[in-house]
Structures are given as structure tokens and as C-alpha cells.
Length: 181
Image (tube, rainbow, N blue to C red; front, side, top):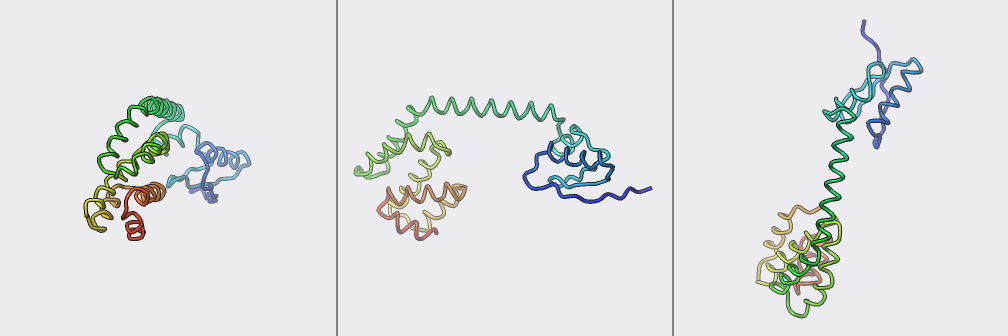
């Protein structure tokens, strides 16, 4: 005999735990329901926390939690190591700026380097900016500069940041930003 499951919505933003608890609350009230979680259908009469985690992540809840904790600790270790390297990295990026930028931009570059290194992108935008400014300052075409920024795999936020920096550090920056937007 086939069971008839009422379809319920597991809302965007639900965690696996919240979804399982929602389904279990229906089961506790005697209702057969199913719900879709990231493409996996879960059923109120058979779901357990571990079965849901296994089906969705390939790991039990304990294995998943352990992996998440390891990821968090690794991320914290990487952030700490990066912060410790900021003075050394600052000197490197300041030197690179002097190889590409006109001397009237050096002081401002030196001010922003440690700020950029300590930000979300950890200085990725410094190299991206210098690559584009180098093209523009060496008589490269706007198409070449556009091709470069498109090859850098930016998010919308990092794209905007790099454009702002290019605008600031290249005499052709405004022209470039208008061209790529």
C-alpha cells in the first residue's frame, strides 16, 4: 500500500536540523508529510537527524559537526597567520606599487596597502589593480584592460573595489571604469 504524503514547504534558510524537527513535529501529530531540502526529499515517518545529514551531506550529524569545527579552526588559523604576515606583505605590495604607479601615488598606495591586506579579500585586489593599471599606463587598450579584469574572477563587490582603485591610481582610470561598466 502506497502512503500518501502531504507536501510541506521547508523554507529557504532552514538548517538541516530545523527541517528535520519540522518534519518530526508533523509525525508527532500523526501526519504523513514530505519536504524537499536542497533537492533531497525527506519523509516525516522515516527521517532521523542522522539519516537526513547522511542523505544531504554524505556524513552523519556528528561527522558533519566535526568537519565544520575542523574547517572553522583551519580558517581561524589561516586568518591568524595572514594577520601576522601583514607587515611583511605590506612591504612587498608597497614595493610592487612603486614598480607600476607614478610617484605621486606612492604615499596614498602605502596608506591603503595594510588596510586592503586586513580586509575581506586579504589584498587580492592590490594585484588586480596593479595588473590593470600597468596595462593602462603602458598604452594598452581598454579592451586589454577589460579582458584582464574579466579574467580575474571578481564578485560584484571586488569588481567595484578594483574599479575604484584603478580610477584612483591610473590617469586613464575614469575612462576604463566607464568602459567596463
